[in-house]
Amino acid sequence: MARRLAAGAASFAEELERLVDGRRAPEADVGAAVSAIIDDMRLRGDDALLDYTRRFDGLDAGVAAELRVNPDEIAGARAACALDRIAALELAASRIRAFHERQLPEGFAFTDGDGVRLGLRWTPLAAVGIYVPGGSAAYPSSVLMNAIPATVAGVGRLVMAVPAPGGVVSPLVLAAADLAGVREIYRIGGAQAVAALAYGTATVSPVDKIVGPGNAYVAEAKRQVFGAVGIDMIAGPSEILVVADGENDPAWIAADLLSQAEHDPLAQSILITDDAGFADAVEAAVRAWLAELPRARIAGESWEDFGAIIVVDRLEDAAAIVDRIAPEHLELAVADPDSLAGRIRHAGAIFLGRYTPEAVGDYVAGPNHVLPTMGSARYASGLAVTDFMKRTTLVGCDAASLARIGPAAETLAAAEGLDAHALSLAVRRGNRPPG
Image 1 (cartoon, rainbow, N blue to C red):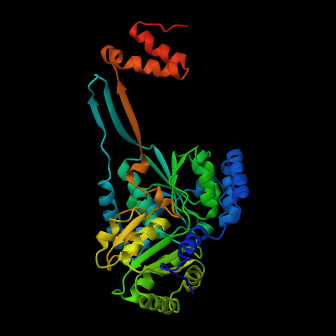
Image 2: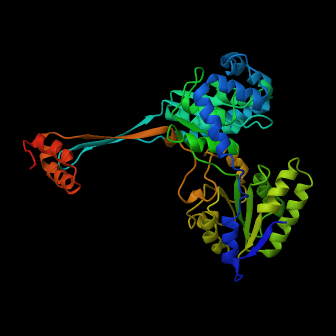
Image 3: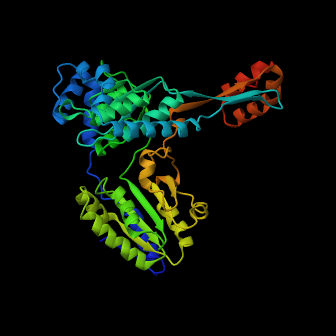
């Protein structure tokens, strides 16, 4: 049974802090193992990649070039998929692309009052690596959500790494890659794939940024290669927080809570409601759904260990609690969701109204489903087109404009004890500072 908290209780603040700060079981220490793999990959390149792929994925390729998925396999993937699934992928891809095209930023250029030309321009990254979980799981939606914003941004080279036990890659994942414009795909996974993307091998050329979800080893590898390449984020287990009044169908809300719980035993699902009787009904509905769901063991562990129901006196009180939790996904299943949403600052994505389950956002709504977790919605945002672009500023002075603003720069340089800075300004104005 999930824990129950009453917002009106004297101990509520303390209990909420325990819920927020202690909500994750500690991960196994994988840092040393990942570091060893990365070091080996940098030393031995393709040979190490082949060894790890054989060891972890049971794929015994003779040469590293065999790890690449050939173009015919990519092109033929659609034919191996059910037509309704291809149609669903195409709908999702079109909606994701349309939403992200609206995010394309514009640069600017102007000349200010001192005659200095100033500007800002956006340019796409040259090469991006996309990690896609493989094995028993197939996540074509993850391919679309990571690759489409990159193609909209104009990234020149997209490389996908997907673990393929026995060499098998889901045709639906390949079909999604084809739809999203990914042509370079490797059957590699784990920390070794992240290292290959970051540092390159004779077969896999390095990229500039790595995005996409993975297990603890993949997350740790991304953490360790950050700096050599960019990364999107270090994502934790999935989260959902549902604010619901008693006018909802308890079975609907229970299904929403379990939609994230089924991802991972460490996932977290929280309900906030102002109706204690409704809370009881949702809990009963959770138990009923768990009797039917194929992933009931995973979802049940998550709900038992990390799930919570918070009963508030008024729904308005939920806003402050939501901001303290800063959830990845927030559903507002209330009569006036827009009003409540306007009072909330910290959430990765907000789903408005009784007919907007989080699951629609995972697939076809359009906004990205790669979102900040573990409270990082306080300072981070979901994946966007601008994550695949760089800003460059432009400055242009002529003699007159430098004469106007240069003396102040010289003064500040001297104050900081940086004499060559001051000199580089002064000589252009025909001066030479003392000393």
